[in-house]
Amino acid sequence: MTESIDPPDDDDIVARRELETTRNAPAVQLVELVAELEETDAMNLAPIYDRADDLVADLFTSPPEPDADAELEFSYHGYRIHVQQDGTVTVRRDLAESA
Image (cartoon, rainbow, N blue to C red; front, side, top):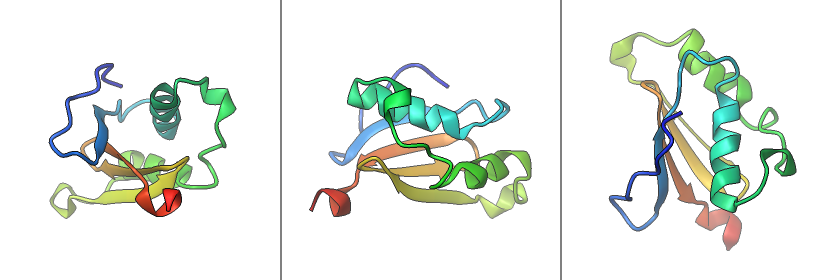
């Protein structure tokens, strides 16, 4: 995963990264990103497998046709995570969970 957190284009965006789409268990990178944002160890967070683990893996290992431009969006640990087929991840605070 690209190590830097890009400056947000919009006030709601907390981070934007590029996942290593060929890495085993790519969803683990999302847990690591959220742990970094929360300044905690990834082991302190709830497992992501009950949220979207297989969906993220399938997006990269058995991807739809490139022109499908598939995307996945879900909530995890107070964040709204948007994963694009090209590996781009955008993280926003999940306002629905904080309300």
